[in-house]
Image 1: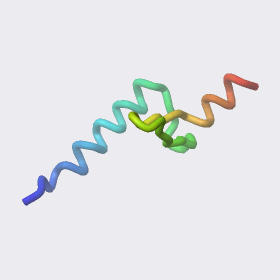
Image 2: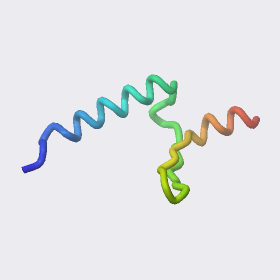
Image 3: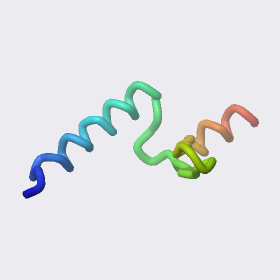
Image 4: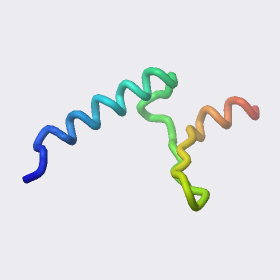
Length: 51
């Protein structure tokens, strides 16, 4: 049997991560990998830095 609360626990962790990184809920995230690890970056924040 799976943990029925796992989704809510993951959502709490994700919300805490967004707050810590100062990411908005509507920011566009890009998910990619380099063969050994998953890489997530905030496209909106990257555009701000390069503008």
